[in-house]
Picture 1 (cartoon, rainbow, N blue to C red):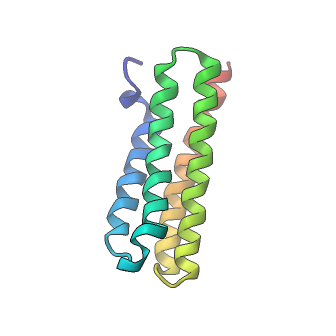
Picture 2 (picture 1 turned 30 degrees about the vertical axis):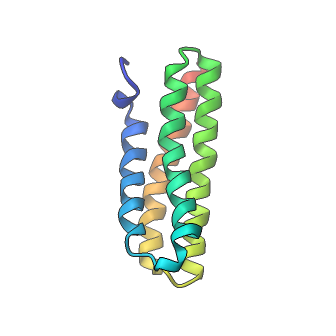
Picture 3 (picture 1 turned 30 degrees about the horizontal axis):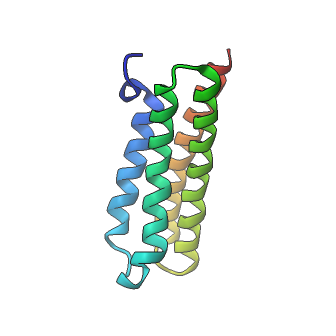
Length: 117
């Protein structure tokens, strides 16, 4: 791999981040500095940690950053659940994002397992 941009996990997490960003445009303005800010930060953290780990050129460091990315990925799901609980997004929309989350989670776990070998 020449670049983190070649990693399938990074590509899928990037698509997830972009989808979240598009969704946030529909959130009420009073959530701008609450849920919107939190979701932007944690979704950006997922891809940023994958990229940073890749740039460390050491498997142990890369795994550490991928685990951080996995934590941020889980945080996005929790915030989306909060958005559903507060009637900002529908159950169908939450389910749609949950599928993307699960795909990213599976790829991230696979990449971590690969790095361990």
